[in-house]
Image 1 (cartoon, rainbow, N blue to C red):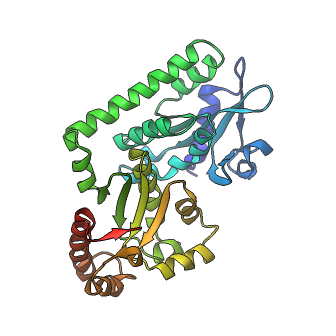
Image 2: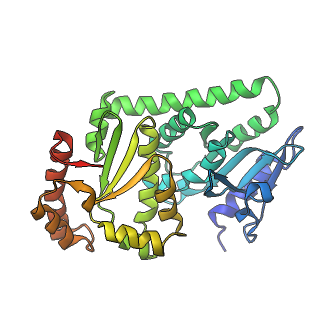
Amino acid sequence: MALSSDEIIKREIIDVVGTTSKKLELRIFPQSSNEDQKLVENGGLTFSHNGVSYGSCDAAWVDKDGSPVIALEGTDALNRKSSGNAQYQRFHHALGAVKNGLLGIYYLKRGVDKIQEDLYGMAYFATKKENGTYLIIDDLVEVKELVEKYGTSDYDDLISFHVTRMKKVFNKKFNEKYNRDWNVFAKSRSTIIKEKVVIKYAGRMKRNFTDGSQRAGHIAVGEMYLTKYYFYDHNFKYLFLKMTAEERDYLDIHKADDKEWYLLRHEENVEIMTMDDIHNLPKSVKLKLLSIKDEPLKGDALRIYNECVQIIDHGLRSGSLFVL
């Protein structure tokens, strides 16, 4: 039987990094265990910040007092046809550690696909925004070096090296693809930049969060973190054009413990908006959106959606439409 991604990563951590170093000890659990679901202060691998739980990590390194120092979330996604934004989906797992001032690592085992440069940008800007440091790494030998250097004068220099490397990777791609212009980026990513607010719109609908076969909830969370950290000095309004305020309220009640919806509703400086929150929206546009709100975006539904998007995008940019 083929090993799961989690089991591959956990075995590799033990084999490459080892279970102990001079000052740190590895905390890791077998795939069959639920111990990782416990909060880290209770001996588990789940980090929370301001009452918000960010999901369990695959491993952590703790000091002699049992206090966590480094947290790692890993994936074999690069060998499992995850070439696009699916790579963002586990970004939040190590984020709780970073928010608490620790070193968080998202390890993507090298594979047939490459790491999206966007991930380096997300981690770099999260490092600028949060109390800790977030690193994207594809080689556990580098993690081993960090673990072994902890407590020495070289540790901070090594972290700075990785942060600088991430910035360079992101900048190179950003400059090539978007001509060094955040407005070009925003236009291509359904994003509108205001003075203190950034708005991102998407065709998310209620079913994305109620139907277990849907993956759009995972994508929505990944895109939320990308936008939040790229524009970390803005308030972020995430606009779900195919959702009503009533449906948002329904999800708040019935999906309060759903991992994706929970993160979308509890992330700091992120507000989920719906078509009902667009002021001055023409009635004809709202009726069109209502007519397709439960339909997948293809065929006539996609055509109608794109027609509405043109009007809404222009209105939000010009100021004739606005969200509060």
